[in-house]
Amino acid sequence: MTPVLDTARLVLRPYSMEDAAPLQAVFPQWEIVKYLANVVPWPYPADGAFCYLRDMALPAMERGDEWHWTLRLKGDERRVIGAIGLMKGEAFNRGFWIAPEFQGRGLMTEACEAVTAFWFEVLGMPVLRAPKAVANVGSRRISEKSGMRVVRVEEREYVSGRLLSEIWEITAAEWRERAPNPPFRTLR
Image (cartoon, rainbow, N blue to C red; front, top):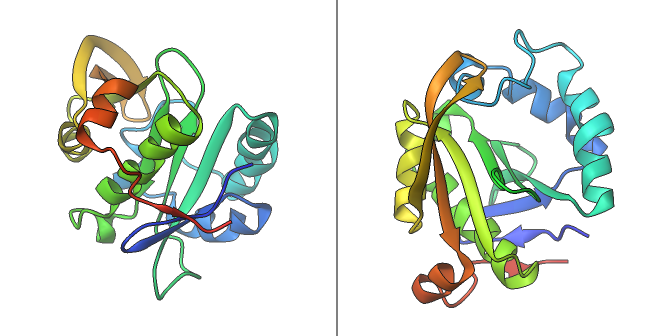
């Protein structure tokens, strides 16, 4: 089960079908999708969030293969400002997006710290990997700040086309060396 996570400024709520409308209202923006994997349809369909939750994210969460949260500011928890997820797999374990008006405030860094701690400390995973388009400077900065390092460079397909991509990685031991206490509180 995916718990609610509480950080200094955010509440990370596990996905539910009730999130379809708020996700749909925020997500289909070029600034959000351009550096996401090309599995995201573009233009984004009117029922895209509903279908994604129903057919992909929620079934994967029920199987225990993925963990997904909406990001909500404390004090304004009805409003979805972004999303973050963890996925089992060899080369892609964490993905996220945040509405453009909330970028550059350290909110996604805070969310990444919480879910990365969950990955290592609760799920007991040995390594976390995250691919990033080289052009996605903000996302790369988050990985740098969290102690990750580039382990491979390759080309990947994104919504905006084929781009040079870096695979970032951090091991559980590296994580524990830099962040011995999880930066979140489990609310349920």
